[in-house]
Image 1 (cartoon, rainbow, N blue to C red):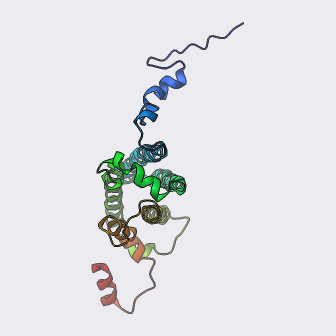
Image 2 (cartoon, rainbow, N blue to C red):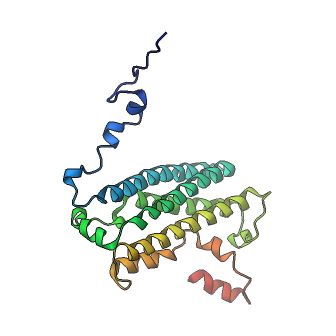
Image 3 (cartoon, rainbow, N blue to C red):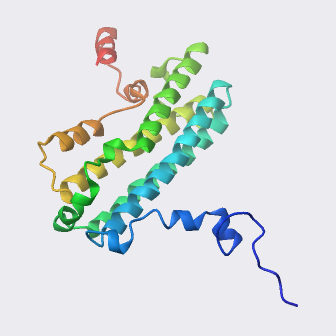
Length: 234
């Protein structure tokens, strides 16, 4: 007997998979061949559009992590942050596709981009905002319990607070690695002047930390409280 494979979900598409994934809309979001100035516009758009999708998911994971942290659910917060960190690793890995885009090809397609810049990414802005919220929520969690960030420098797998601190450090590091990779790609493919404004901005962001107090906790003890106070002011 023949099985009925006709779709049951509402929407466009010949199959339920196509309808649920909204493939007709998704696959129409890239410029058509007759619209392209250069064939590598497809590569460029796919990498950036998929990045925005990952960032949407990452921001949602971070937002939920903030909510769970504020009610003391540290294990769930850690799990959500781990998922977000994997997402940022996948976003970074996608940049490898730009190894196949030469500076000459990029310059040929650049007029199609107008004045567009990755700095305008709404996904990255949302991720940055949620990271800051997560940092504040963690600081509040420590303050309520009388825990000093400096006490979190020696990871203890049996301590949920220590494990979450490690997950926050991992998140910070992965974002920094993405920024470094992005900076190198901008120099290699975009033909940016290393001393130019956009490249300089990317270079400065490489050293940015969402959770500086946790990084300072990794430093060896200083010679005295005065030095430690000076470090806090930097």
